[in-house]
Image 1 (cartoon, one colour):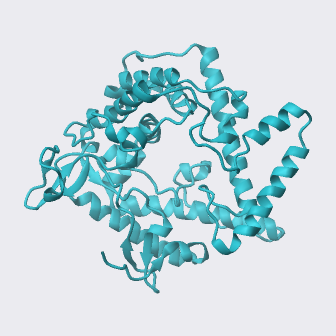
Image 2 (cartoon, one colour; image 1 turned 60 degrees about the horizontal axis):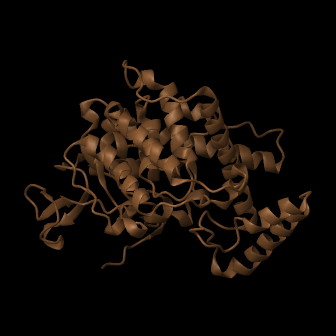
Length: 393
């Protein structure tokens, strides 16, 4: 193992000028283009052939001692899934890439699924603190599998490509003059069909902004009559729009096939439902159900044939209502985490831990004091999202 030179981009990303950000974005896109140019015979994960057990399936990569073997993404090995006799690849056919993660979850649910609360405690109030049932998710997975043949895009977007599994600033190492010198955390990387591997890195995308989605160049804000808080918000909005636009512009110029995949009208929903169908089930049935509802509404973009699944209008409305409630909760949690000073995983720097803990306790006390009934206080206290708890409850 070697020590990578440079330092994480995350140390300086939010302090960079427009010109510096563009320099980094261009390098990210050009690196992606280099990865996309590598030819792979199948989908799965890349191994040295000598490292795989003799009985492990593999497909050789020409003129090398490498091969494509079973997928190493965490979703395939989480909890009891590691011991399940399931097909983890390699895959020649893109339809198997679409179906296999859902088949993996079906196998796990039928063997180990039991009623439980959603892992995200903050969602539980919207469900009246009721348990979720694995049978509901099984029905959603069966419906997803029925749809998969029509999720396949044109053949030029089926080519296997390699992308970094977590392209974010702390995994990108740069020199003092902002040249990218290394990428870390490849351990869960997968080779996927281009239409599933495509996408804008999370730290770059600005999909909540309608102007960003129209691929229009950003206009610098007029800060003249704004107070300091308004200026900060306007500059942050501009920064997000700026990097989103130029990532796409550079991709269109230097990685045209990736741009075509991103630009497909069904791209975002297809990638999202594929992700939700393969995620380890932890009690939240809503995301996959909401994707299925949206697919039925947008089915004409996928096929001229009748959609093989349907939802009664009342059920579809109820699912989408719960989805919107979860999105509102996500927005609230983002603000609360920022106020406490923690990341999505609860992490905070060691020297800030005591202060963050104090803020978290104060926020809990304030929240409980604002409630009207003993039952509300009891359930909120029991399911408070920032307390330690049994993750499998």
